[in-house]
Image 1: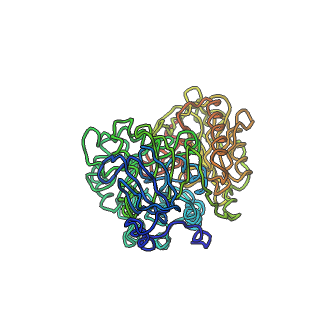
Image 2 (image 1 turned 90 degrees about the vertical axis):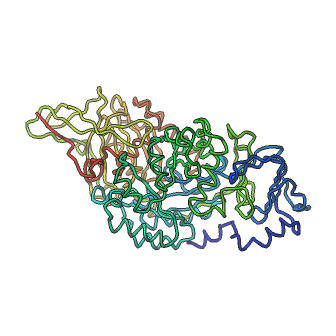
Length: 607
């Protein structure tokens, strides 16, 4: 860890603070802060206890009881709760900071007013672009923040070896090294579930290095098969999973000793379909965790973060205190941090939210590590930035500019019509459908069928300047007219995805992102409608979330102007190269059938 990160850590350990905490609780010393006369939401006992005080010293909780007057002197800061609920700071159990298009500092600044005080982040996006060095940069900036950002060492770069090429590869040696870093909490989601099922030595070595370090292995089982393959994956060591989409998925995971992480992100709506395992089936809620996975800046600025997820769980019929447990103590316990955070009890980090209503959950004041960091939706603290090196801002290396000819799909000789495999986008879900379409051939080129919502998708190699472009077809966006959308956010290999109805606009969009160093752009009839610059690794901006959100909203508006009405269609766009989630994806090597984990042809038949 860099000296800068060491300098900016602002929480002392329990051994360092224990003498003070004991003295304050006993009344021999004064607290730094006392929150007075609130309703204590106790997530250990599932109780709401009125007329309680919280005494805080050196960033930790020293005392919780009906009267903390013995902890107060003239130096103590008093916060009057005035009967409001005092709940623990919210924890996000699984998320990717890069999905917000923001650096850790700006992400923290965006979510602090929403009551998120702890995040468990997997920076596998930057790992694919900059390798272990990129992970370390994210780790170091995370440790500078006034809230708790724990880093999971990415496990799968590439996510599916042999089916894609990344900028860098992560090795078991990298994982073992990262396990010695102070902010590493475990192994990031093990997306290569076929590798685990088949006992791939590399995947098992990464899991073993994590378990030897006594840390948590994150899961990612993106398959509906709950038979022997699922059981083999569980036996391989992953301790949680966030890829469930239905009640049966949630039940299968918790029955096998995993934690079921239910996500509500910008485009993933998987809480409502799974939380019935608790609300209707009556399963033990301690094994369920709420998370976001992926939230873009517009969602963070306009809708919220973990507070949004908790509200949604409550709206789905979950008891408010149970929903809070799923976003606090359950998460902390899963990562071995129950004695450190996740509840308002002595010894824990003093992460507290004041709210006047448990159902609608207005975040009225946020205290983290014993300091007031947000009030009435406004942040009150600085979030320090890492000094990102220049080479981290020069990662779009696609070689020569592209022309319209680079986006031609050549037809078999003599063909007049072809049957093609088509990636089918599914609204609000990560999986795609493997569709087929009959397309016309003109001048030896396979033509799109815009009337029936079949346009082109291309993956432009951008890590090693190889000059290659892979072409295929996609359906579900509803684009009309001549347009193209390009993005260097292309989970997980993060080459460049270009979707369009016009090859000329596709070339313009790709070249524009090369010019600005990465981001997202939309062209229509040869003119740029929107641009979100993401110069850090082609994934993130170090500008404030409000500014990025404004540009992201312009991007959404531009997509709608081109005919796309899908909810959060950008998220679907960015996942079309994620070759570990069924059914059909694109990579720099071609079209991938993710049900068999094999390459497949774009053109299936012709006449």
